[in-house]
Length: 353
Image (cartoon, rainbow, N blue to C red; front, side, top):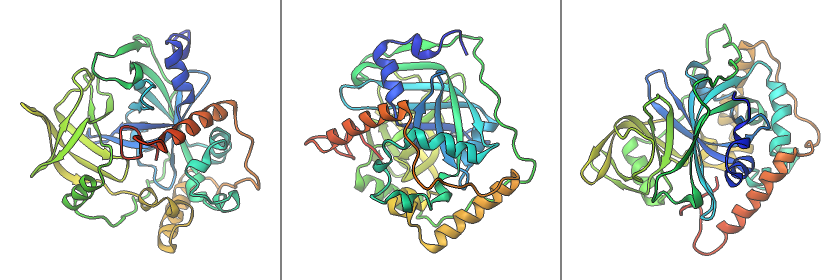
């Protein structure tokens, strides 16, 4: 890290937005050099890193980040809030899953009603397939921001400098990795029609010139015979050609190639990635069907065994929230209130998963 944490070098309103951020688009790079975006929760740390998590029962993005630590995050907000794009270096923490749970719970305990589907803690604590988290700490290398979310002009930016470094990830387990769960899914063409019908926000992810995967929301998306036609802002730090993914709030993610055309950007789709049942149905996260639960628990146990760890335990009562969680809860409440206001909804300019 630099001598001072990023929030000490950034404008006050940008630092405040980072401290209160609770959702982001998180992008990693696959072994085939495909940049892949996933919407996830996040929390800012006092040392200037920002953390995201994923379930040990579906660890693909953590494994991608361990193999290639170059990652990207996009933090969006309401119309009066900044839009923040981050290129960073990932540090994967999975050597102690119980410790990860103990760290994670206080960071989200002030606002988990936003994704609890109304279930009480007595039910939530049974979801060990969810709570067994891999934590990924991201050290910012470059930050771009657009004040009040407007992308009609070039962004401001901050750079950590050439000497930036991030702590190493925990070593990968020596035992062979578990096989990904084969979830049923529709052909990409049918999924594309569904996404167009639902009019969900879509984020295109490409590599920048330094190889960082950067997600950015498309201004508009239209279906074509081979994929999608996209409109993007002019002044964004993406290389608008090459391998890409287009993610519709995690419900469907399409893999293909992007090229500039006179009318904007075209994506030629090759396939759709599998999506977790728990993403499409929040009830399935806490009350999954027997087959879904069995698959998740089987893979969780296998991944724990690879690390020589026991099934973690959840406390009888939720822990008190951290100071940061209380700050994020205030922003979560503000966003929820705005979403209920006429003119702003989940499928509009801003959304909450």
